[in-house]
Image (cartoon, rainbow, N blue to C red; front, side):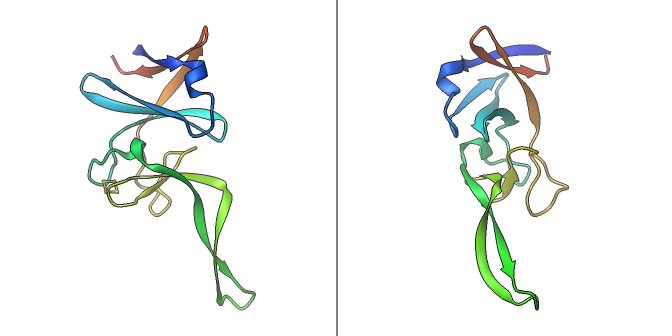
Length: 124
Ligand code: FES
């Protein structure tokens, strides 16, 4: 394993801030979401799109009435998704799993904060 420098901690302090690095010809995105830094391969499991460039949005859910009739849609503010810019697949930023099919996940990496700097731990 090798620790790769990503940024100074202050550069990724704000919610939604991100940095995409390239190591060994592979992209890795480090994103601060829901107060935590997450690192994913910048490679969508659908068709390889640059998923870490995508928008962060709250998950949309349908609202059903007591009789199960459709009442509209709303944002689930507990669940934040990363949306792949190519075809819109959504991935839970805390788990890396797709909202639609949990068989597909983003590849995750460990994020390390040390002495005011942020690193991502990648296979050597
Ligand atoms: S490549 Fe990501 S949704 Fe298709």
